[in-house]
Length: 109
Image 1 (cartoon, one colour):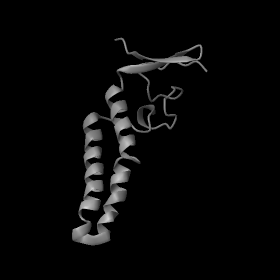
Image 2: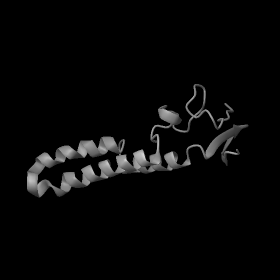
Image 3: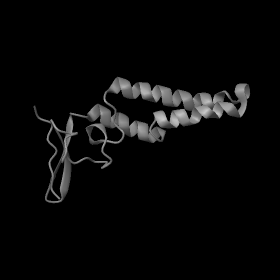
Image 4: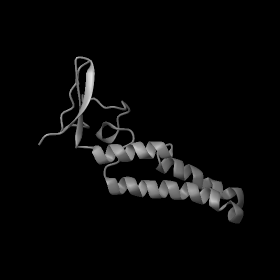
C-alpha cells in the first residue's frame, strides 16, 4: 500500500512507521531526545556491567541488576543502538513509498 510520511506528523494516526509497533514518534526503540536516550544507555549498560562485576562482592544477589539493565536498554544492546540511530535521525529523514518501492529521503524545509 503506497504511503508517504509527512515531516510534521511522525506520531499522528494513520502515519506509517518502519517498526509497526507504535510508540512515541512511530518507533518502538527511539526516545524523546538524544540526551534521554544516552541516559538510558548509561543506566542499562552500567546495570548490566555491575550485575556481573559485583558477583564476587555480593554474590548471586547482584544479578538482580541485570533485569534493570535489560529494561533500560529495551531488550538488548542492539535494540538500544537501533533506538539511538532512530532518535538521531528523527525529523531528518522520511520514508516515501511509491509503486511498491520505498526510499529514505531527507526532509526539505
